[in-house]
Length: 157
Image (cartoon, rainbow, N blue to C red):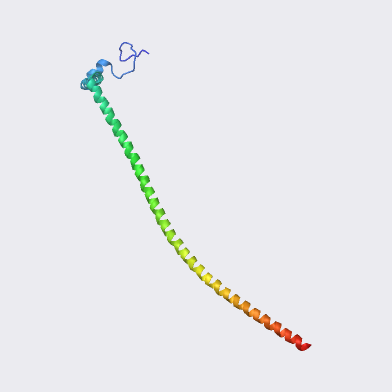
């Protein structure tokens, strides 16, 4: 697309506020600085690309950046792992304390049930003796009744 700028000849490209001659006249120091920076950047890039030592330095810089990045990632992963270990240790400690208190409660219940069992065994033996005594008295009473019944039957005859 032809562009007309300040009565200049038609040309291709973007519309600029000042023609090239006016730009360099209005901003001579800025234009000189821009040219120097552009040339030095191009020279530095070209020197690094062509110089084997520059390539080695660039590779070492890349490696240092990679090692630093991986080190930071490893530090984050290690931090998460240590947090998990701390949580697991706290949970294990709580579980041990809970199991210890549960063990003490269960041992107390076992002792209580053992004492209840011995009391019940004594009571069973006592009741067994009372039953045996009652059965003996019942036999004696049955014999007395039979004797009295036979005496009554004999006196009635």
